[in-house]
Length: 289
Image 1: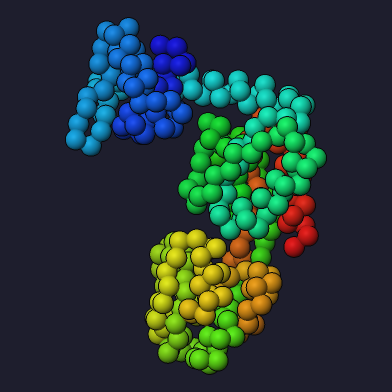
Image 2: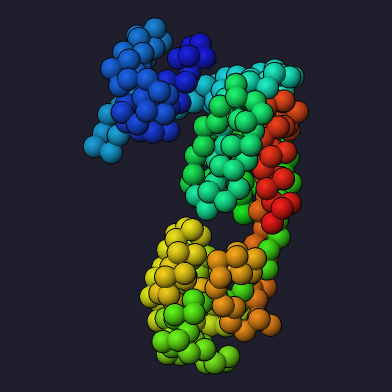
């Protein structure tokens, strides 16, 4: 099995369908199917059995998995280490972050970078899903949690206080909530993943059981939009709430932990010229906030 064959094998294993594997590899489905058939013929063994839920490893496939993953790690190590010596301000950079951070910081940074170095191109993925930087799924990631995986270099770009905010229109209709009454009589806009992770759901330390969850969203950009629209009271970074013209409720109350933003890259890539240049542009955007 060579590396090209291993890529096909691993993609089918991870995606479980030929269509999804082809999409991840940027190949057409027929090509992936032919490559799998040729690989199984060369090995003299079936690597997958097709089930109602997708392609599942056979016993032979299970035996092939660890060596194929070792080939993958070696290929990515080679790619990272050689690209880390690349001094050209040209080529592609893969960036992953949330939609809110992309709009506020990454896209302006790309604009500044491209004005200076038009031969650099950016592949931007906006998602809350964490990707594997060791596998080169991304060269740069902006995350709200510091990673712990070995080989990654993390730099904290921001540590923002989180406070309660509402629009002037909302407060005209509903008035201010009373501290200690768990938002009784009030509508709330909440970030669903954060609330789901709490043992006792709360905003800025105040339990929310007395309020009504008017909007539960899965992106910070949607949360800001919901608060701006007057749908309910929400917990957002203090500097962003002020910039949006919102009114802060209970200025003395804030979330126990600040909202942190970490810029992450692999240690083998951090000195690549084009990656270093984009890191500098992104960092500049945070310094100006």
